[in-house]
Amino acid sequence: MLLAIDVGNTQTVIGLFDKDKLLNSWRMVTPKHQTSDEIGSSILNFMKNSGYDPGGVANIAVSCVVPALVDELHKMGHRYFGSDIFMVDSTINTRLKLDYEYPREIGADRIANSTAAVSIYGFPAIIVDFGTATTFDVISSTGIYVGGAIAPGIEISSDALFSYAAKLSKVDLSWPEKAIGKNTYDGIRSGILYGFLGQVDYLLEKIIEEQKQEDKGFICPKVIATGGLASLMKGRSSYIQIIDTELILKGLKILISYNL
Image (cartoon, rainbow, N blue to C red):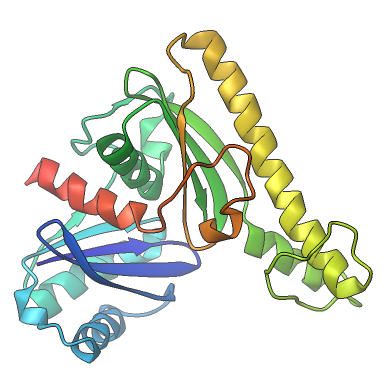
């Protein structure tokens, strides 16, 4: 089995694959200051509580955007699974040409998402990842990674609002019936969700417009949304066609197969 681990700034997603089948996945708060033992214990508990034998894990693929955890993850792999960790970065074989000024600056999560999108959905494509940051990654009509955009994520922007506005309380992120709120609770939800929807669709509009000028084959790109909050945009965005919340886990599985 393959253990795929996506360590994000806010949440860590763990997926267990048997060949091409995703058997199960789990989420936990990213343990930014935990040790290899604490990380390993959490993963073992997830697996055992779901009825999976940790002894069946043959490979571990990791996407990590928290540098402080890289060494601990390597230690965890050796101690708890007797396995080296395959760590994603811009130097591995992705089968993608990276048309980017400084490829080492591309996050491992963005590399895994882009690889999965090209392999599963084809190109041209745009991947929107709703995580701690909202990232946009663009794949040309010839399968080249040409860059993208990074915006503050929904949750951290909302937290900033509540932190600095003393009279505003946190709300659940569910869509209000109308954009015009008749109370503060609905007004906040409207501002957050419709505001981010507007941001996402405007950026997608600009990306498509610019890319069409440079890439004549960039017609009707597949727009794929992923990340923990991607489902919020289902049926709302004028551009997002596909919701795949497990895209990055699939990307890790594909990338390790390219590099074994």
